[in-house]
Length: 262
Image (cartoon, one colour):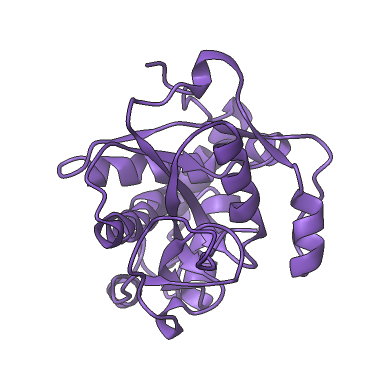
């Protein structure tokens, strides 16, 4: 099988911006990206808080069954924003570890033991160019490495975003759904190939209304893939208030949980 879209995502200009930022930290000192206390990297208190959450099902009434590892509290907001928009590449292993926990819980809850393909929700090409790397694809690759000692996991950048999608910031649930209708499609050609017998798990950093994961689920299933569910690092609605998932299978009878990043 052919890997979908090689994950060589970093764009030179953006990569250099991130490297310059890292060099500045080394020269000028740094602060914890979670609490802004002086120090190097994530402080022990913030790391403990990040690792203190257990994945849970979050339901928005739309989209696939989704597990999120953490609530999108101020700590997660700081970490996700620093990683995605400010070149804090050193946070990727921490966030990917939380994503792997959510994926593992989804697989355990569904009882699935076969091959799995992680499909990151795509960002707009302009956003990837601006940042210099594909933040969600990076988390997917690192999470897959964490999962491989036990599970057969690959990563495919199966989905691409069509032109004409507005920035989701500030949009409500209805506006997000309308904005994203038909916004994603599967790549054409051999890049659509998935391992035989594999199921797809959609992955994203944060889910808010669930519109993005619902659209991603539509595009994946339209391409003929079998969708098991979705996993995210964090949920805008606290997943600890939701009941645990009994199954990772998507069902038209049971409203699916979605914690997606848009």
